[in-house]
Image (cartoon, rainbow, N blue to C red; front, side, top):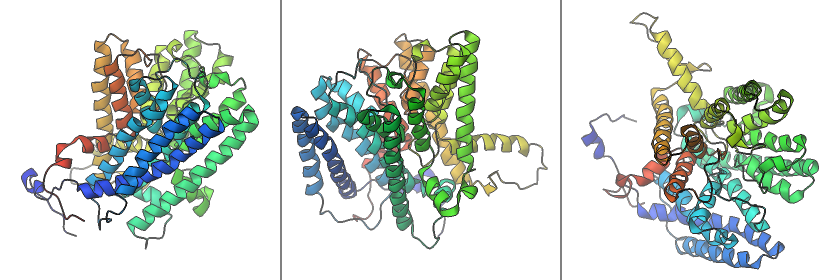
Length: 494
């Protein structure tokens, strides 16, 4: 295949807007999937005899089915453009929270708070404006966790499809597959593997948590949020309500398992654990979580915030909660010292592994960034005529992949700074404001106390945008907002 190189004006000739039939076709298919997933909350509302919620979910079900069935017969395209893939993903994550407001408002939430809660759920963030959740219906509590569970699964499946265009990520995801498979077949195969792994982790997690916590409903809601690295809890005091530290850490174990690249589990099964257990992202994630935990313990003891025995028990949970971008908390974060907040900020923004349910920049991108810094420094000490290439774990880093990964990091930083300024203008403590913004963009859900019901509406809107942008890794959301995506010449109709 020939490579085209030209000016911006020449490139514009080969630029196409999305085709509306393609968008309608695939969003209608997703609507049918969401309609199927909505049957679960309907069933829960019937089990708990919360019939007003049954009616609201049924209305939502009818909306999804009407849209999906009406467009079901649209012909499938022979090919799909990248901007169309991003648009389908972005539109789904944007509009579904609006629809979820129908049932969530049944529990006394305002429209804006219901939208915030739904956005936080589908993006697996876990931030909440609610003062209390223990007065809510059991269907409401289950639905929040359920949204996070399928939001996390959906994002991983979408990520697998999109990352097939990135050589570094694709090699990590498909290296165990037969090379004769087509891209579509490989993507479907991985989506199936991810679903099996996700279901297995969820079922095992519920069983383990039930044994250690003793409350089956609490086990379900917490593990659905844990495996998806979501962080919604059914308790006002979050997991600190669970008296047993063993019970708390059993939940954190499955947060960590969800933050590990899900295809890695299949590679362990396929290739054996010796070849894959020391995966560089996995090692970096574990080391980062341990370093963050150690730093939190040191700062807490040094500042006198917490005695060292209590710190050893409580703070590793918090460190890994931030590193996995889960957002479960076993203590009051507004009381944490500034140095600990900075530690948590770095953990939240760096995040988990690519191909996992975790948010943040992701470990692989951070490794590429550090490798490029090291490579640039080393390049100054070699002869001018020498030809060397940056490598990671022995594999050459291609320039296109490096640019894509560094672009995502840059967009995360820019969005953080732009979102941070309005909070400062409203008079919030700069460190707490930065903590809240990073928590939203990293889809973590830990809060320094700023997110609440009476938070200024414009700031709630900014956090909603940040949660969506963070979950979609910013680029997909930018594609949806870019006018050229929707207006301009289009390719073949199908």
